[in-house]
Image 1: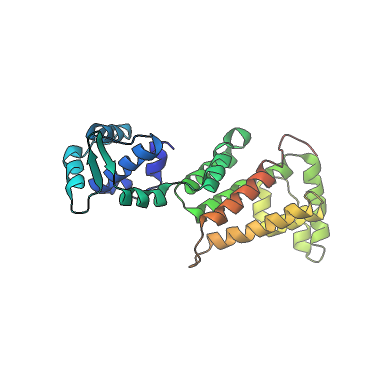
Image 2: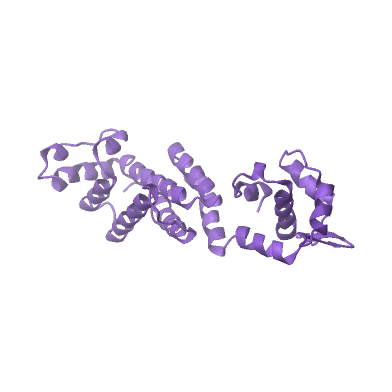
Length: 259
């Protein structure tokens, strides 16, 4: 993990008191740079790496090692975090293996996503996931996948023709809806709800039943994440949405491959 990635996970990092910054930097040196011991110079170097003016590091390090319940253990080779402090930071900032997998899945995508709008959604999804903003990550991943689906339909004349042919069939009891015809990309959002677009893909036989079920399920999870509620959204829920939509929509529906 890069130092910038770690501090991006910490809400209000720049306003943390020096003691908490030094704890975090010490943990980073132990965990990600394999340093068993460190000195004040090592901590100052991390401040500078982030283009920050160092606090009075030497003073704080000595104070943190001499408190009644010290944060740092002082040894002949330098300082190291006490077991209690390191365990707390391990629990808070060590990535679960599934997080590493999902993070890599997202960060490997940019070269595979040609559309500019999709790249914007992807960058925001990555940023949200890294800082554990799982509600927002689910919303942005849905935006990415659904935009990809629409591009997949619109950019291929035969798929677009099949989609347009399905509209009067699906909405035969609604003359206003039945008259919709997609000429521009924006016509999707202007005239149809997301759920209706998924249903039309089914009517047009553009997607198989498994993918239709996946899209409906993930749309429901997006709605849950997007609407204000007291429901807690955790990493496992974001992992499920990201892996399913990226693998089965973004990577599976090839924009370059005609039907």
